[in-house]
Length: 291
Image 1 (cartoon, rainbow, N blue to C red):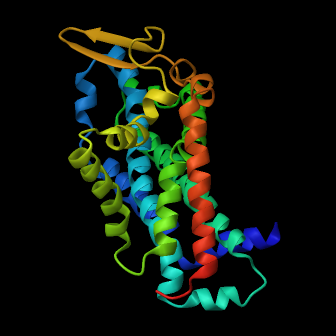
Image 2 (cartoon, rainbow, N blue to C red):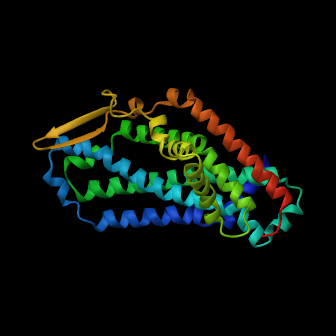
Image 3 (cartoon, rainbow, N blue to C red):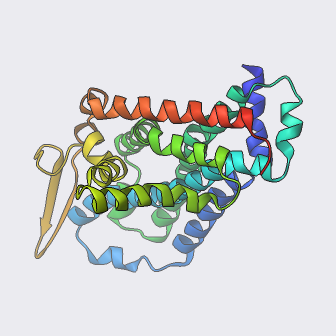
C-alpha cells in the first residue's frame, strides 16, 4: 500500500498540471465573478432566482468537469508513453516495483485522483463565487446559493459522477492506456485512427455500422445510463414567470439512477472490456522500454 501511495505521489510530482489547471481555472472564474456584471440578477423575480441558483452552481461544476475530462484523457494517453520517451522507464524498472503497480497507479490517478482534485477546486471556487455574489448583489438570489440541502446534493452528485464515469468509461480508459504503452509516436493519431479505420472498413465491406453504434453508445450513452431523463416528471420541475420558463432538477435524489446503472449489462460488459485492455497495457509496459 505504501508503494502504491508513493507511485500516486510521483504522478503529482511529475504532472503539476493535475493541480495547476484547476487552480488556474478557479482563479479565472473567481475574478470574472468579482469584476463581472451581475446586475441582471436584480431584473428577475424571486421565483426565477430560486430556480436559477442551483443551475448556476451546477454550471460551475459542469465547467470544471469538462476541463477535467479533457485533461484526464490527455494524461491517460501520455502517462505510459512519456516514461518511454524520456527514458525514465529504465530507472523505474530498476526498482522493485512491478509494472502492474505502476500502471494501476496511473489508472487510479487518471480516473479517481484527478476528478477528486477538480472536485475540491470546484468546491472552493463555488464557495468563493457564492460569497462574492452575496456581497455584491443584495437580492434574494444571494440566499439561494447558501441552501445546505443544495450543497449536499451537489457533493453527492460529484461523488456519484466520479464513481460512475470511472466505471462506464473504463473501455475508453483501457484503450487510452493501451495506446500509451504501445505507440512509438503520435499517440493521439493512434488513439483515433484504428477505430476510425475499422468503422470505415465495416461500412465499406459489410454495409453495417455496428462498431460505430457501440462507440456512440459508450461515449454518449453515459447520461442515459446513469440518470433519469425528462420523461420522469418527478425528477424535473418547470418554473414559469411571465413568458419565461426554467426547467431544473427537482432533486438530485430523483435524477440519479444508480440501480439502473449498476444493474445494466452494458456497464459490466464495459468493465470486462476495459480490464482486458488494461491487462494488455501492463503486458506492453513489461515488454517494451523503447520509444
